[in-house]
Length: 230
Image (spheres, rainbow, N blue to C red):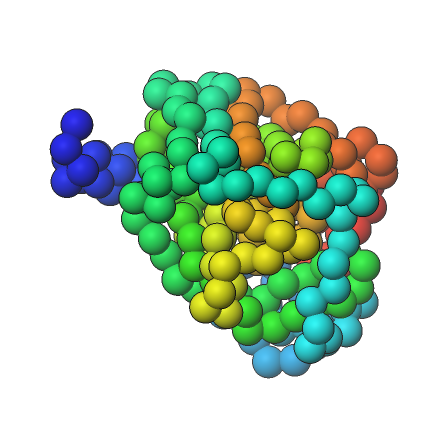
């Protein structure tokens, strides 16, 4: 398939997905909560800029499972499968040929620090979903890292336009210690919902808990509800 035709199909599928999940996305707590917990001026989606229990940091602390895998770009692969019409395995070249998105967003860690106004570049999860076309019964994704980390996200959160698989931060390649070459970011949820060193995204027909969710962390992870633990 020619690249122009592939991009056209992605755009069409993206619009169908947005229409399908638009109402659910509009009603999510990180957008629609009438009594959010936090302080400061409204952020980009109308919530207080600093969620409850958070402090602002200028640094970017490193948190992981004690493993920092090194993945050469020519060996990196992203598998997208599960409850989808067209499962794929993307190489680095495939990934970089997809529509690229630049965004500025805040990063909220469950360990109580927040780093504001971070500049990212990557591929929207929405565009990856458009590429594989989730089945009608799909409700969640489970993300897998090269370090064997897993985390779950509902589709109404995952398909928001600010959920990215990023390869660049502040104009430079994403550092290995922060999940490079590619990690997911979920700016409207706590950051553990964004897998570092991401290698697979599985679409699910029912929810399945990930690494921290199995260990007592929240299934939903809404910062403006102080939603840290189950």
